[in-house]
Image 1 (spheres, rainbow over the protein chains, first blue to last red):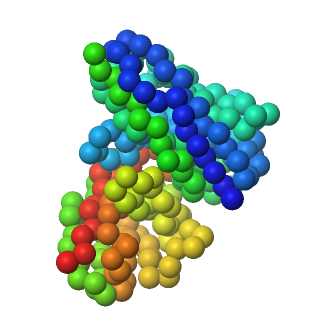
Image 2 (cartoon, rainbow over the protein chains, first blue to last red):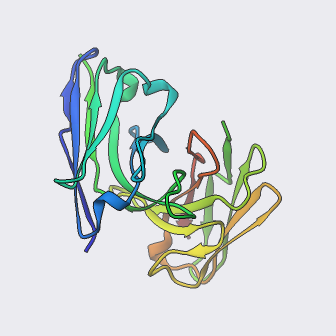
Length: 124
Length: 107
């Protein structure tokens, strides 16, 4: 069974840092694009970042570029999101999501499996 | 950036009825569109990808279509478990973007 389990959320002050983790199981992790998607309280979904399975390709939402860093450890089936210089507007539930593409090696994905999410609250 | 505009914001449908949800893209994007369903307190669930392909385990009463840049999700024979929020998402280019969502209520 495919499982994605996020951890690392919590309360942090503006300007602070957090590192989110996503533990994947039930599938061949290193063959899938992996993604972070967030949802602010009472708001819609917002894609944050993607890391591509088939090469050193990484993409970010403009508003998090230079502040967030996505990475993966294929040996341990782990996805990470290092979040620095956090702002109040980063407050959201952060979901880890597995990506699927139209063609093998494709970078642009839809999200076929989601974790349960971890809440990040940026507040003083 | 491709902007996805969903309408209506809220849809109230009787059990057994049909719900028609719209998602309009700000420009052409081929068939690179997915639909998700989210219930309160839960993660989204994939329903449809490449405009009209149902994800594994999704009932046949869910269908997707497109006309130009207007994508439609149709839910036939609406059931109580179909209530919640529905989001469209394009994957035509970067950044990936979602629509603002349509809330489906069962009368």
